[in-house]
Length: 237
Image (cartoon, rainbow, N blue to C red; front, side, top):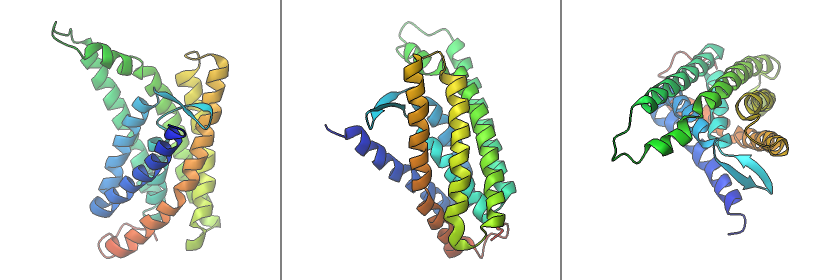
């Protein structure tokens, strides 16, 4: 089907961002923290799958990973820098935990009736390198995003300027993330022309995702004022 991948990609953006808002609406900050853990683990599994998007080679995982920036920007906007940093370090812990647990599971000798070992090895045997690249890129880029959002918020502090601080912080952070991750996790796994396409496409797609997440930050802000303003005393708005 023509443009099937592109249509699925666009649908996945709306679905993932919608899930973040759902988690925030019904579980508050805890929902956002929980989503960080889900997103960093799934992103590092999805990134192993390469697809063609807009006539370029790309890896999956860009969308769900992009939601981590949405989450930290929501936390930064409503609750401040400290809460956003907490989410970053929680995601870091979840990724280390998941990698360690799955590595140990792969060391078990499978029974003769087992049919999953080879499939798990395909996904998780390479995961330590993917995880190293992801953890490094995640920690550096996310901490930069939290710092940059707070920096730009001091300059563009008006509520209607939220889109400026959101995009300025996220777009630079995504560039940092793409360069670190593709270098550490993927360099040598693909031919150089394919690797460069993945790097370029990854960043372009992340830029699109970053731009599209802006309305969802505004919606999250409205959710706070409608449902949480009288209950949560930790907000900085």
